Length: 508
Image: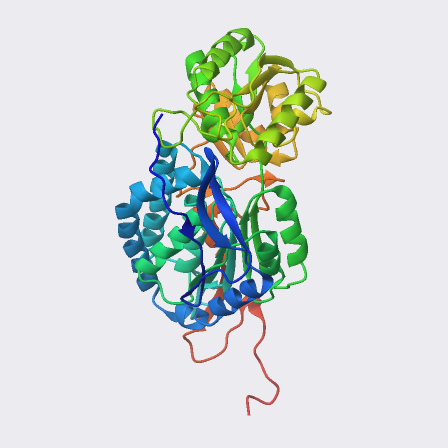
């Protein structure tokens, strides 16, 4: 086991209008989930007043920022990319300490954030808008994009670097300004990200940072000065954001809110490939990705062989110190998460599950001071009344569910309130197409795990997984609005649809 050198706690600060504000009142701790006694940092517990000041600070530079050259804004992202490259290892280590993801995953997340920044820079010189034919030969018609104004960016702990960049990148490129509230579970990496924006040369007030819990988030959502709310987190919070936002006529809300994603292992699947995809889908990040598979649907002709290999592979997973790259996964985020997973493990038993691997908290000397959990795997036939196979757990808890044919598999996949990610393991292009057409999802993968998003694709889902406004590359549709612009190059008025232009008595 690798033991990290003890570091002094990070001093948390708000960033408002280009000025750092040290805590003056209540504060909260960010702790290492792998070592509960290690305080990563102390952060100010923001208030509604702090949130309001941050929104006002973002509003002030908005007119000048939106009028600036889109290419110039993009070039600042090129600066940011260079800064991130220099800080990759430091960012990965901080992330591993604060959220408990294994260092290899953390490096990959920093690279994913870098890719988002590079994507944004690349689109800066690409066409934006359209030229559309007019019914009238003398007219040119254009469709242009304009920013909305101030974006509130509220992000989760499990991807504390990449997800904020999915939202901040397109928002800022298109001329919006931002108030960023990182998760109270990962404020240190959120603060470091904002520091990098400043190092890259972004102007004062264009990006603002407020730490805190639900009080800050609630204040941002209630603030009439916020034009767009971008949120990733629980369905309950996303629903609350949408409800509050209905009082603002020009408010746009994009929410990504949970899943009950699945891997479907078809009758013709390559078994070893299916097992690898299932293990990665279910247990990477200890099952704490929004796209993690907590259901593995397996054709009944394969299920016994699959279970033998899947359970055997799960037993071999190395769970330990996030700073040790040889480990497959680290701890869950905190003790509350441990208790939640244990409640669902117990519920699975009550609902008649056949327990295949009885996972739970790890108590060895290596794991004693962290929130480590081993995989819990069970077999259960699908039932609409079984909560464990319909509700999001967000931990190393997975059901193996048999199915008879593709029709039944699609029905099982769809029988949850969520629709985020899907993986299909098959050698048949017809089977692949069937699930593509019949399942309700936002991201689909074939002969791959159901995790592994790339930034140039939209990230989002359907039903309770999202409200139709995806993150990453798809976010540009949310943080801008289209305007029509029609120009007459003639010397007289000609109207579309053949409308007459004759005025009684002439123009005089």
